[in-house]
Length: 312
Image (cartoon, rainbow, N blue to C red; front, side):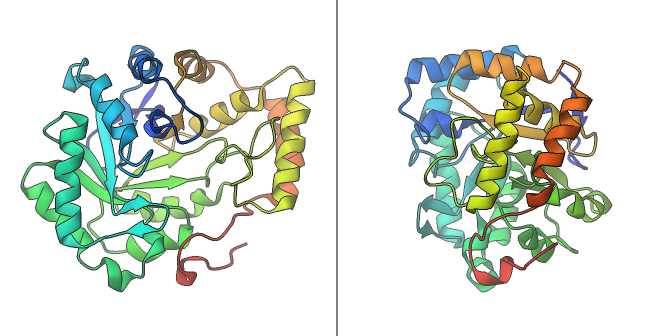
């Protein structure tokens, strides 16, 4: 497993990291014992960073993850969780709720500190409704309950609003550095200038890149779904799982410190980790990128209108 520096945090993160949302039975019903084995398998492959949230499985993911990491020495992994989102339409970024949320997460995770704390899907409230959030995170850092703090969300404009001149230390962006969407690249100058640690997530664009067809709940438009499915089918005809190409592509860029992938299956995480060690098929990559070119950087709205500016 390769490791990269996470901005100015001083942390070394594995290029592939573990997203624990699957442990909350978010995508399918999961077996807790198997989920715990998956976490242990991830650590065994060299993955050293795990991300979770109280929103995933409505606290189930944190609870199961807590049982898993209780059996692992704390210096073997870095841990991040989130605050502010607690249901599909339940958001609360007040200081009182964030402080309480972190205490609850610490208990579920069975740890006494969190390496990185993100404000979860901050684009769903206006800046005015989130004015207490960053001061709350600074207070938690002063108390030693979190080491670094930042924000997470989908729209690139969210980060363009919050990052300039801020003391935000880490960000988590998803669905913007994958085979079909590399809009995250436009943020890199700002992120690198300020020394912000960057976490990329969802190399499969939340299931968009696969032969099974996009999940019914996926917010992507039909043109994007069709192109993604065509690319996946093309890979399959070459005897390659597009997930392999996607994983390799997202972890290959030296400027993207780490990419989160989620699964509750031990064999899957071992396979994902092994793929990052194999050379990428550049010829296949070129053909897949050509198929996806007409929908390159096509995204979908998330949150309030001001964070969903049209972009080219």
